[in-house]
Length: 422
Image 1 (cartoon, helix red, strand yellow):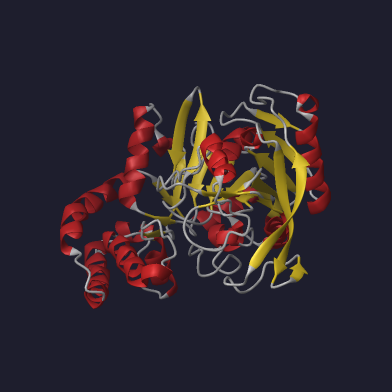
Image 2 (cartoon, helix red, strand yellow):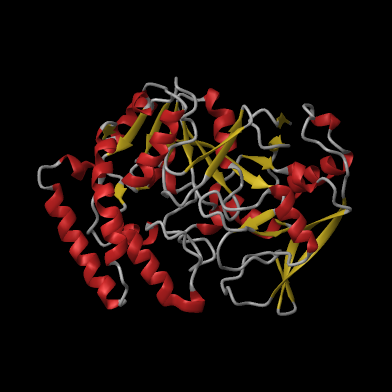
């Protein structure tokens, strides 16, 4: 049995949560392998929108097991808030949500360090979600971090105080006024550990490999997007983990030989939250129309997303890095109403036409576009691929031809049922 992988091929916000929820019936286990509460996976069913941050998107299927892997960083306070919201819906996730003992903890001082470091960057700030992600992964790599398994040890508070003091020393170097915020949230954070202790804390690498040996089907769920990968994204405007398919191996503890198909989620256009290069970004009324039609505001931050046309240069790059075997195209309905739709097929970099992502974020990049005729029809109620507007099908055919990857599902609305198998 192989572990299948689902991840985003752009800058995040591609609609991964909806797609995981949609295909969860095909799997026994859904496992998150990286990221933390900086993720915002939106799902909609029964006319209710749900946003998950740490918990895998298969949680609304009570018969399925959900695992938070070792590559994830967990803020116990944010985790408790998610659990409480599920309880309001009569979903007791203690029964089917397991947590890796090796997942690292986000401390209150990690969030304060995130804010202090971002403020110190001034105009060079990267647009952090200020959830403490970067400082937590920094402590992980620096071998200073605390892990979920530590909360079960008798000297946990001693370990916590030691790391907190290290953080306070750094905060003082930034001359950051941390005391009011820390006093406000620290006790709540410590209390929230009791919620974490209610769950099955597991050695997830052993359990996942056992499930694979027993031929149990597993889907690995990614967060953020390929172009935010700490190694291959638009560095330094990236997240702090490996968002690409290779991150599954280290984030769940599985060998490369046990990975199966890779489902890449692609929005029918492009969006980005935060700073960093975005070659096809639109600053006119077309970009504003995309934002309005697509309700493009961050699930985690609420910030307006930057919007632009589909970029095949970065899409092909993401497909190469991840070994994508099939694409799910989301938010096709948002393009309804445009007279003309454009796709970036190459870059003009200082007068030279290139089809690679430049190393230099400051390079003068002009997108080279190919135009397509738009369509006016509302497609949100269409259930069969052949009934979609010809213009949209031509657009999809072009993407498949250029990427050499089949599009298996087309999403035409936010609800889990607004999806068409191609």
